[in-house]
Amino acid sequence: MIYQHRGLAEGRWQQLSFIEQMANIGSEVGRALSWRAKDNPIYCQRAFERALELIDLTLEGAKGFPRLKELTRLREALVDYFYGENEFMSSEATWNNYFHHFLWAARKNY
Image (tube, rainbow, N blue to C red; front, side, top):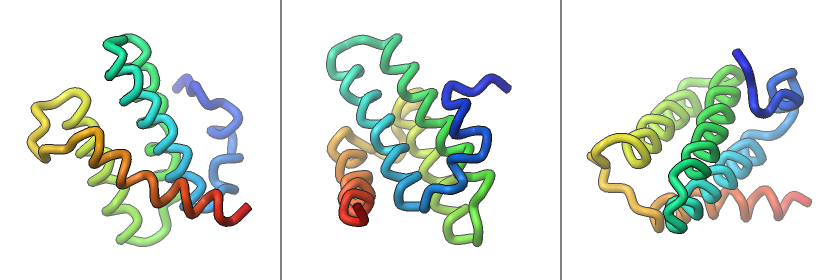
């Protein structure tokens, strides 16, 4: 598999805390949302693919069922929002609110 985040895929990602991982995923989702709002589907898709890659890297190192369950549901809901029929009725505000807490917690630790 060809990774866009090669350095992270080589093991550096697993050294980050779960909160830091989720904050980084949220940053990519935020970029995808921003490009979507600017009506740039190519850049939106690229940012979203990077977010999926980070989710998959997080899933590889997931410890415990609750974390695994949240990550798989997150992946499912994001794919539904960006590529599906939005059956979960997500919105840009929903995603910004969800990831905001991780961004805040990650910044608080520094």
